[in-house]
Length: 160
Image (cartoon, rainbow, N blue to C red):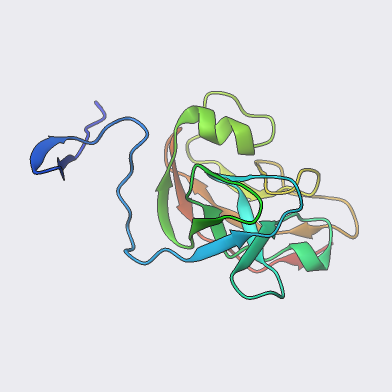
């Protein structure tokens, strides 16, 4: 089946959706401030809200304080102390290169049909392999619909 691109209006002109652009499926994406000390939050990273309101850091499945992400970063790159948007539900579409940067062990984007979990080894990353080590958390984040589209469906975490 051929991939079809939707038509959008850009500066009053009708055109196909351009590579790297996306259709937001909810108008008011949460805006968060990057609370990391020296790391940019990039598109597709799983983030959790810290105790400081509207401040986010990279989620990780290795400790109770870093699990339960609020969603995946929508903004391409959010430097420390700057604000960016988070997608909390629905389908997020990124390039294969953007997915490769935040998915452990993948290249060429997502594995269609694959269930992705919060990574216990690398903060913010997703993995096809659910954690199996005692003291880590299993937390499914969603399912890949294609190599570029991901259905966000964050499930409760389970301590191993």
